[in-house]
Length: 152
Ligand SMILES: [Zn+2]
Image (cartoon, rainbow, N blue to C red; front, side, top):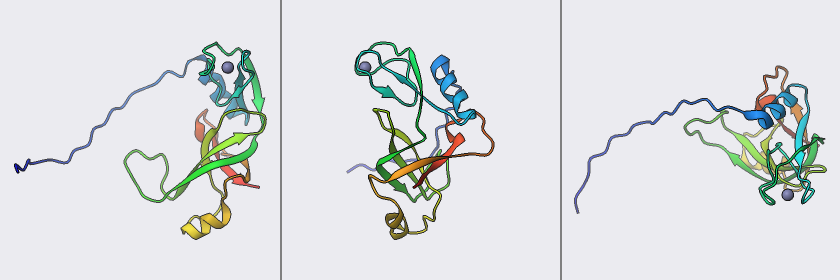
């Protein structure tokens, strides 16, 4: 069997992404501690974060709704190791949250408690529990203007 030499390297791809009208309005809302979604006029689902079109019906969404800051944790994952380009230092929990009155899961962090062991996390976090948005003090129009969702 032939052996190949390898080198370890890192690929970096810095870029800027234009938010566009829908994401701009969504992120501007976060600055005011409001979470906005859009309603599909065909299937009536409320999509959050706000979307330009309904991915099920393929029609433009034109109706804006401010959604609840509370909801139900549908699923979560605990990240306790570091890897390239993480926005946060582990440990952290990423959750799929169904905000009240919406019809899709909103992915965000779950936190506000100690995560120093899996047992500590399992004692605090369960699928189906109610959570509420906790806002950052300084908001910049970024998804992390919501610091995390805390258990209620
Ligand atoms: Zn639809």
